[in-house]
Image 1 (tube, helix red, strand yellow):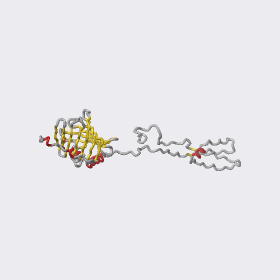
Image 2: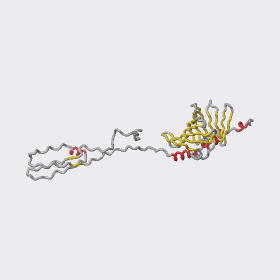
Image 3: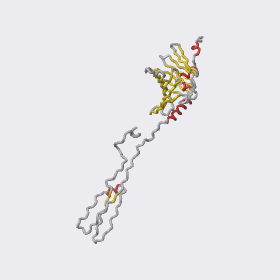
Image 4: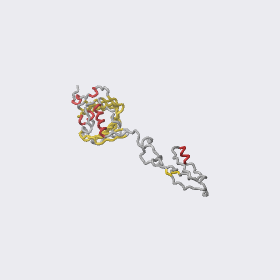
Amino acid sequence: MEMILPPRYPITQGFAASVTFLSTSSFRQAPVTAPADGAARPARPVVRPVNAEQMLVATAPLPPARPASAAFQAPEAEPIDIAPQPIVTASMGPVGQGQPLPNSAIVERANAYFTRLDTLVADFTQVGGDGRRTGGTLYLQRPGKVRFEYDPPATLEVIADGRSVAVRDRKLATQDLYSISQTPLKFLLRERVNLGQDIKITGISSEPNAVRINLEDTTTLGGTSRITLFFDPEVQDLSQWRIVDAQGFQTMVVLNQVQKGRRIDQDLFRIQYEEIRGDHR
């Protein structure tokens, strides 16, 4: 990359753009001597060198002057100055380097990504605040429906059906129900996403391999949650997110093998309300 991008420190070696003067910046006319008959002849015109051959001729040693005893000695001619030509060097500016997106464009593209997203199926890796990793499959159907299905030995399932969010533990046979408005990712499930209005944007940063959007939600269960969304540099795909809850517990979710537009079985989003009510039949 150093061959393409300009250096970040002053150039101390290499080519310089300063004007370099030729070592032979002036030439002298040959003295005019009188012929044998005593009649003076005009001095030979000076031909300025225009190519390499003429430069060699012009810089050849001058013939020795006649001795002082000669019949006639012309006064030494004034030197003729030849203006040197500056040396032109290649530009050192960047070539074909993309500029980072402005924040307004980043927000616009992120909103468009979620608004256009219909269904998404992906493998995910979840990393908790204690460093523990769990994997599983994410099923998302906008608006309103999502399912996090964790791989064994985990026994958890998180399901949203458009009205509520259920956290189910298959091993303990328990199921807790919450309102979608209480979850930190509720804005992902809305029909139209408008970051900056639906949820507060606290910062945006562009890096060589990712764009981050920092969000803050003050209406989640337990208090304020801080959310960071990670997109590719062109803000075309969501790759991961990080959530820090009101107690400071951090959860990172990384997506892999993402498939968009895939048909999803609607039974995956069904919450068993009868188990919550105790209507066992």
